[in-house]
Image 1: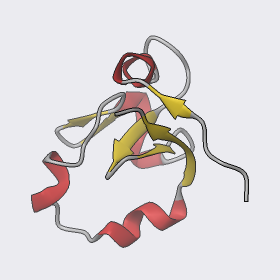
Image 2 (image 1 turned 90 degrees about the horizontal axis):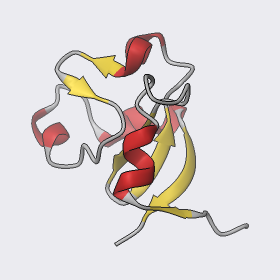
Image 3 (image 1 turned 90 degrees about the vertical axis):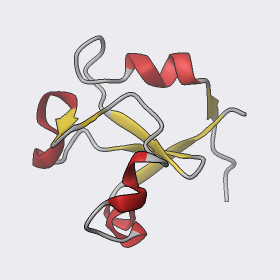
Length: 79
């Protein structure tokens, strides 16, 4: 299995659906591409914005971590 590339918070921040066409979010150290999701249109999903680490924000989400299984892991968040 190929190792995933690492991205900084600054690189992630540019993938917010507005500065660049990609819509990425980070969760528990992984970066997911949610560009194809209709729920992330324009880089916003309810009160959550793309281009960020949403680990803390999603602790009280109405869904489980399993929701991320349908998205492609494209990288790791650089520590």
